[in-house]
Length: 132
Image 1 (spheres, rainbow, N blue to C red):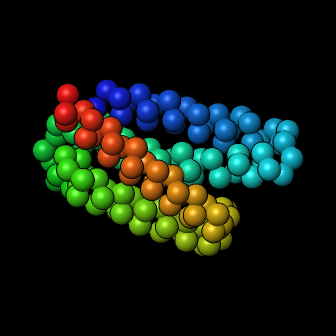
Image 2: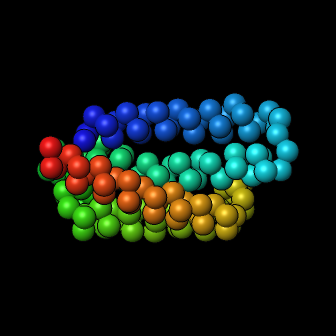
């Protein structure tokens, strides 16, 4: 599961960087595609949270690894809830003008959607890998 998570995180991160730093700045697309490109980093980034936790923390025993371990459905639920909490805090911190970022409710909604989808996809993969 750790190797699959590593592949998902690296591929997803490269795709997010491509969207954020290459495709979006060119402003080649009109509204529907532009909107999707705007929320894609939040959706994909939140989708990668359980996979990142698995890749970075599985097989380790320090304090943070014990908090973010992913061995049961309960652990997965805790990681997803903590991840969503951090995403919401991050988005609300963007209201502070010092950071020069923009607050958007769509970012929170699509982060929630990506994390929810990830919960089910990762949970299914986790159960499938444990049966093998």
